[in-house]
Image 1: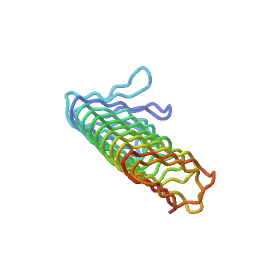
Image 2: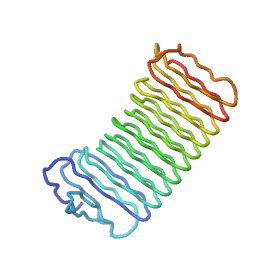
Image 3: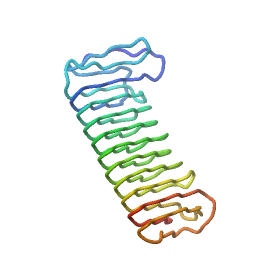
Image 4: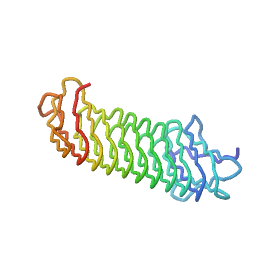
Length: 232
């Protein structure tokens, strides 16, 4: 693989874009950016590193652990493996998978999105497709049609959905706000958490199993679907 050395100035930013084709980015123990013969690496005056494809198509890019990554394609999936820094990923049509990022801003017009681990803020937006977030510091999710699942969030949560169920498991250390037009909402909080719950559903009375209090604010609303706020 041809490769260009990165100056020892700290965390690099790697930029990759293609018109069509899947892109795989791998963060690993190395001090350079390596690509296959379908692309080459260019160093920009602003200090960023750009991967230039010779033609549209699938490509794998290997970069240092902790590197910031800006990646996009009009048509194709994006897969980001290993530990990365700030991740910005965009596709018009295709799924996006992020394994481990310091922060994430991930957007798709049509396609499912998965972020397994994000220690900071995680922003997800897709018009058509499910969104699944593993362990994150804070979550902001906007979705048109599809389910939303958040396995573990330390801080604040904001979810806006048009159609699809929403499940959130939170530590109760930040406000939780979830709204969907059509779909059930389930919020799970730590045992002993005493939330201030503001819930509204046109499909029946919300089910709140946690004792009331002021540990955190939970605002949930759905036009069609049940609401449950419960302890673990």
